[in-house]
Amino acid sequence: MNRWRKTLIGATVGMAASAAFVAASHPGQAEASLVVTYLCGDGIAGAGVKVEARVTPRIAAGGMLDVGWSLSYLEENRRFGSPGFFAKGSTLDLEGVVDITGAWRGQLRPTGFKEQPELVPGDFLDLPEGLSDAGSIQRPGKIRVKPGALTVRFKPAKGEVMVNNSNKAIKYDPPWWSHGTEEEFGDHLYDLSETGEQNASAELTFTGTQVAYIGRRERDLGPVRVYLDGRAVTDPLVEPGKDTNGTPMTGTRSKEVLWKSPVLTYGPHTIKIVNAETKKAYLDAFRVTTGDSEAPPPYDEAHCVIQGDPGAIDLVVPGATPTGPTTSPTPTRPTPTVTTPRPTGTGTGTPTSPNPTNTWPYSHSPGTSHISVVTGGVRTATATATVTPTRSPKATTTKYVKAQVAKTPKGGVDTGEAPEPASSSYGLIAGGSLLLMGSATGGLLLRRRQAAHAGGGR
View 1: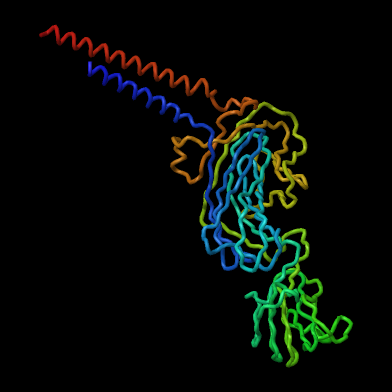
View 2: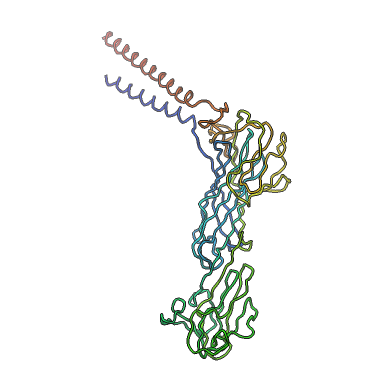
């Protein structure tokens, strides 16, 4: 009896293992990703920033190829940095390139942005959670998706920032000293820097489009000379000891705009104030202004190149029932910066010659965000991409991750490219289970006969 129980337990374990094996051999929906390392330089990248991108293409219902990127810094102390003083609302904008070859040739340009808090020079910038772009796929075939270059842009927020006299970004040529002031005077942050030494100076390098010198107007203050980008720009000199009409002061006025620059070209600039006489001079703050900009300034742009060869992902899109002539592409979301050039035979990031059996398959409508396949008599693939089972010989001999369309989503067009799930996995499981149960039953009967025979022999 003990032997029979052991046999039953073994048969049960074998049935469970068989069911798990059959289920595992029929892969469900999955995704293939590439991990890409970028080294970024220029602009806000400073001496160099490393970024890791996980690139994941998907074929969604409706025949849309969507490419998503998730991003992260590789080093804690080397990140994109703020180029100056900016109000809340600046953005870090990233744009990637995905080259598509095979049945179709062209590019997708995943984009994303992240809004930043109020910034001072050198503040680390937050990366967007991800980038994305989508294109309409309307012809069967195999395509290869390979990530390309990455561009990082900084769009400063419109606004003003007060750089207080105690800020370390201000370089003082002594002697200057800072001290608190009574609240009743209303100085910025209730403090001032002052000097009584002739030619004592204070200098600030900033990035923006305008700057102002903020201080007190008060009796017996000496004249001040102002330099902008190395040139003296005050003639006559600034007179903080007089009011705006040139009359000597009889009281004290705080947070006065003693001098303001004209509107400048966005970029780095330097303001310097110099005490012209051996009289008292004050510095309360410098006010830095950044005007509105329609697009991120090229000055701060960083360019990222791929380190090594991350490989590519192949997707197989099956055919489907004809949908008739294709009209103009339908936009999915506005991305005015996306452009898709016609093939020129140039290097990476530019479409090459068209498919030998088709004319140029992509078109892009101005103001739309995706590339559409526009050819006559196309067959629309409405399926989801899955990873090819690793038992294929190519999976062990090539560096490219293979992916294929496994089944048609509910409500989609039957492509005939994959077996019905209900008639494959569960049928095999049931058949395998019956086979194992029969084997187990036969084994039990055989042991019983052997036992009976042995008993009769005695």
